[in-house]
Image (cartoon, rainbow, N blue to C red; front, side, top):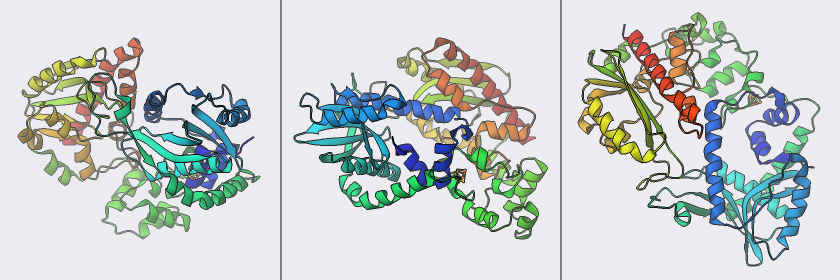
Length: 466
Ligand code: SF4
């Protein structure tokens, strides 16, 4: 019934082979990481809420994939039904391309098409998504008054019930979409030809494997790339690395001949070959600051809901859900959480503030710089931030820490496993998913996970300081 959809079109743009593989060999896809699953969950919540902005609509989502054609026919009939003014997930098919439009609203004798995004700002990808939707609508001869992106208003502040009318903002992209019609038509035809090939197109691995998204077929296409191959380094940029690799420089020995033997790149290749980590200890000691035993290892769990939960909060403003403080000197752990009632967050902040005063140094590991958040919530004085708080992630990044897993995932897990190759650590996202789960049993697991993660942080820190 259809060959392409929004997601397969996006795949085609990233890499024609990824499109082909997805259509012909989907079973070869990599498993979804916990972090990716968490992102999808967040997207759904906003989508559902956006519908209440245009309430009373008819949901056109088919109950199974075989019904896409039927729901397309139904959608086209609904356009002429004066009793139907709003449709959710309206289905349109044109030139073998299927779209499910988030929201379609009657607007006089035309229709206003809306694509919902759970972000605070709009990326180029979102414009492209909307342009594809518009291409299909245009092909189906749907009279469109406007094509809009509906996204989260960064200035919204919750005060009582969620005010849907202020939570979202709209951006018209009709003009952009009009301009893209010919380009998209050409691409759709190209992508259809690719899907109809009898074999996968020959495409070398390259920067497209990770940009703009990590491709689902890395596990498959990268099978032949050795674990210690120089492609896993990051001192040179990917464009240079792939250009060398795809021009025939595929083994480390040939690659190293091109390098300065005292360069970071050489150190990284050596680390790969010996299956060890690399760190510039001089930089590390400079950055780590004064030595002391009075250290608190802090595991701070926060959550950034797209739709604010607490009064006074903006979209994506963090809620501190839990903390775990491990005393380096006594080995004792102090824990607190407000999983069952986020409005108790303020109580936790007071305890945290008092506890942290007892230590000369606070060490945490986070992909985000939480210093600003700690100041905003008055957990720590601004003057203390520079001297007292250390994000081990930043220190290791700035000390050129590297191992065979850190290029695309610089997390406590990959660093820890690089330091202690016979051990493993779970993904941090597991904690976030469990902490925000509706299932009480899953929430109970969080405290232990936070404590365990904190002990790994302490072990890594001490090992590096040895
Ligand atoms: S892993 Fe790279 S080469 Fe393979 S399909 Fe994905 S993007 Fe294309």
